[in-house]
Image (tube, rainbow, N blue to C red; front, side, top):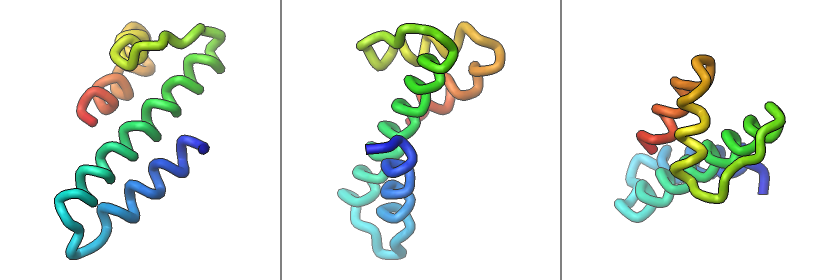
Length: 77
């Protein structure tokens, strides 16, 4: 599955006027995984070996001034 597919699904789940708590939680989870896999792809494209731990991906992004905001956003999810 492509990262953007997770994000699109998250949008659909969250967009419902009568979205249930489970749908909203699932939307957050799917948005996180979409963002996480996008970040991993970014690290790979930058020539870095992405770590296996999710938190370390955020820390690697935080070490780069241009990716710092992305680190914060990923952490918020």
